[in-house]
Amino acid sequence: MYADVILHNAKFYTMDETIPVANKLAIKDGKIIGINEQAESFKGNSTKVVELKNKAVLPGMIESHAHPLEYAAELLKLDLRYEFTPTTADILQKVKEKSKEIPKGEWILGNGWDDTRLKDKRFPTIDELSAAAPDHPVLLKRICNHNAVVNRKALEVCGLPSNPEDPEGGRFHKDPATGQFSGLVQENAVTKFNVPAFSVSELKKAMEQAQQHFLKWGITTVHDMGVKQKEMKIYQQMSNEHTLVLKVRLWLWALTQMGWGGVQEETFAMGIESGFGNDRLNIQGLKYMLDGSVGGKTAAVSEPFENDPDNTGITYMDQEMINQHVRTAMNNNLRISIHGIGDRAIEMALQAIEQSGNPEKIKSMRHRIEHVVLPTTDHLERIAKNNIVAASSVGFIYSIGDSYLRNLGEERAKRIFPHASFKKYGIIAPGNSDMPVCSGDPFHGVHSAVTRKTIEGQQLGTEEKITVEDAIKAYTIDAAYSGFDEPIIGSLAVGKYADLIVLDQDPFTIQEDEIKDVNVQMTMVEGKVMYKCIDGKDTFYTNEASRKLDYSNI
Image 1 (tube, helix red, strand yellow):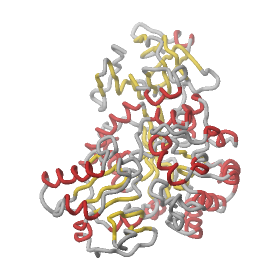
Image 2 (cartoon, rainbow, N blue to C red):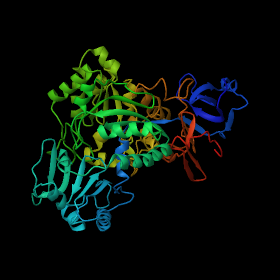
Image 3 (cartoon, helix red, strand yellow):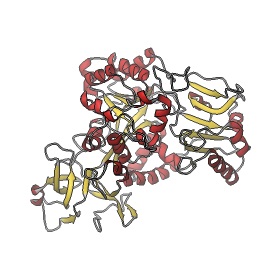
Image 4 (cartoon, rainbow, N blue to C red):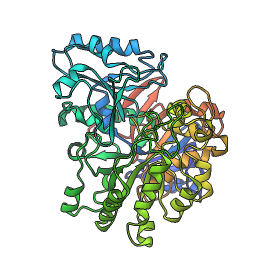
């Protein structure tokens, strides 16, 4: 047997403790068959030998918590991130311009605004949005996806009064000065707006574009944490049409929450269990929501948010209800993922998992708590005891950590995403971005874990810093563990898929502050080049016809 290709003269950081660093890799039929000198024995007349000029190579990054099709949908909406709309006036101008481009009555949708980063530190009001687009319903989601702002036309077309009552698990924010609805909609209140959905064909096309962004970031596997009927259909169709390049891990959206229809009962009725599928596309389990976000002041915390003495956040259900759901899911052999940000929500998630069945079965299932922002020492002990994965959105520190500092205060902000503590307790804690909440670039997350610095340069809890190696493991082998994928991906080892990335800088040798600026020069999925960047020019091979062993000019 001869290799299709041998990559040599590189610094392969394998994330495999048996061979931590290598200089050669042999690949055959999409998998690694030899490392270091062993690789040479697989060289044949037709083997392509590729010189990598001593560049750093890592396993393909694994995004352990994201919403890829939500991100794809955002590409079809107004982009209201701070980089593009630094003031409220800029947001309003984009809305006004869009209102001139589309027929009256069509929805204007946007995403990404962050009041904590806007220069005027506030959200657009209902009066301002109504003036900018009086004849179009407007709904603009905050970067956290837990809050939105709307105009009066949106209330009108959805049959809502001018000053709506709060629904269970949600809030229509009132202006303190007038007592009237301000335009800010929080949590379940967002579900009261019947926004037309994008079609399957629109989202498939957008996902092909989004997939290019993932490849450019060096991501080769992604966990989609909100899969419903439409998402399932899109992934299946893309897989059948050979346009799905990424490996995708599907977490089924269990209950009807946040405007998304749940699929729990259908999953039970069909007898679907965790692991159904193949190496490219498989079902992981059921996802439940317990609380909101820190940025939106809706996370369930024990102590009130800073300068908001009556607000300790929102929970979507009580303890008895989440217990019942988790127990039933376990009885149906489905893994559990629970969104728990604040310490109150983490406690509820732990209680639900602990009461769900046999302790040994619980440990074997590798259940997950998502985000795990503010665990207590007791929580850490119980997470470790039950072999629960702490799916840490550590990338938040860089992207939105400043809002955490403002909303939690210095003492609590020092304790967020405690990766040093996770390591101390032996907890597997894969890193993630929860994109589109934050940039999907995993090196922003690595930078966050290593430096604990925010985008504004503030440093949160240096005692929770970890090493570059541990931070990269959080996005590779630890993330693989979170999906029972460590036998096939997550490290560069014989028998595993040749999912790997070539970098323009070595994250182990550059200054810590420069890690966020590392760029990917090549992304390989199963031994084939899917993305290259040469002299600043991006080239993608994102369908079956164009996939090739193209190693030129690397």
